[in-house]
Image 1 (cartoon, rainbow, N blue to C red):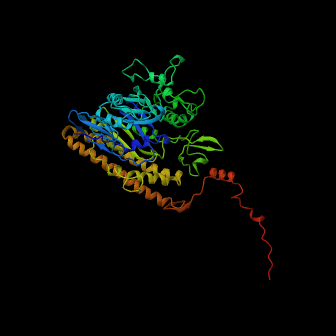
Image 2 (tube, rainbow, N blue to C red):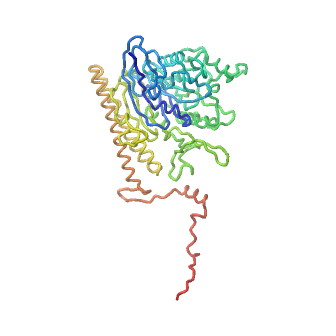
Image 3 (cartoon, one colour):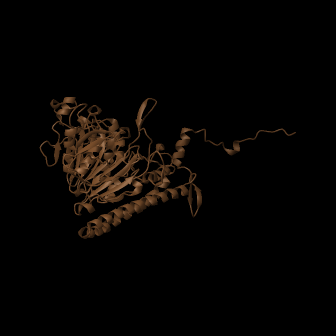
Length: 545
């Protein structure tokens, strides 16, 4: 019998094929750095696509079974050996609370091996189906590429289980090569790390296998390709060898890292110099100790960011428009009079297809401890919904839809409608959106302990009943969120119609434009909008017959 790889997210490949979007941001929070003792990682999967949430059940297969690896038109690209048992997966979290996310850093594109069978999205899904822990997942992924080849460009992975968080970076060997060059580091307990489309691992220990593992060719490949000179006297840095810093990737990648770190640890007073490509500026550390333990709600907040309150605040300036929109339409770089410029690339972006915050809790049994907080569209205007890792049914609105056809039945389209409509009068509408968002997420956070206790009681007496209970709760809560967001869209349409702001008390009010923006307009075209002073106007004399 032959079996097919059940891919959790078709969307992942679409993002991987659009590097110009500078996709994805990932935060890792270790057990000792979290307020509740959980290990958490995040993912914003950014790109032009409609996400479809999927799950795959656990499976058993006969010895010697094979697994086809297909492209996105179901053409078989190759075969790998199937394992005898695979684990159940919901989204990008499995039944043992293992979660995996990624960001693409590309790096030296000449290192991509188009003959490599497995892409990073294949590796993520296969690792979730075949691993119980982050360490096991690293072994599974690296063994697979050693045997079958790696076909993607540079990639950074976040891996989390109930005890540990690991960051792994991987890049191909070049056309026709074998395996991949890679290194993986355990994030020290009590620390957080993050990555955003730029390789982050610099110097790493060569003799600490409990905390660092790497491929045999990790240095030799860089030497062979001329990326590193061992006689230079400089230490080997994975990130600078395989993904050298440039003004663009510092602006678009390191700024996001800096912003997460500066919010989690204000006491560090991290300089913006490195992400502004100031010569000799100090790179940001791979991990930091936050000023205080980070709560789940705190993680939500860290993943909602347009650099507000900094010199790079995207809600300020004429480029934000009259109503402070933090969004800049692609492309990110542009030229004026042959001079090159670039917009900021924020953490919260309209390009996000879906995002998650995974919560792996070792103090609870796996079916209850693992929670996949899932949301669609922009992190700033999404609502993360709790999906327990043991559920056997998904919210229907997250499983349907097409980017080519609007549908109120698609959660992605519902959230896109609200977010896009808000751009008409962002500084006004964002308050309405955040109020509903806070209510819905707050309700889920408050209910979590109660749901956990009820599920734990059932875990001891009725495992099947526990699965039904967690499934019903996860699905019904998510569908209530989507239904409320539909109503929110309708409410915004009524309240902010034709440029007016309507209320029951005052009816339709004219709010006009902010003074600062009007000054910019007048400065740019001072004569067009100028009205002559009334008493200087003289009517022409007219002859009367």
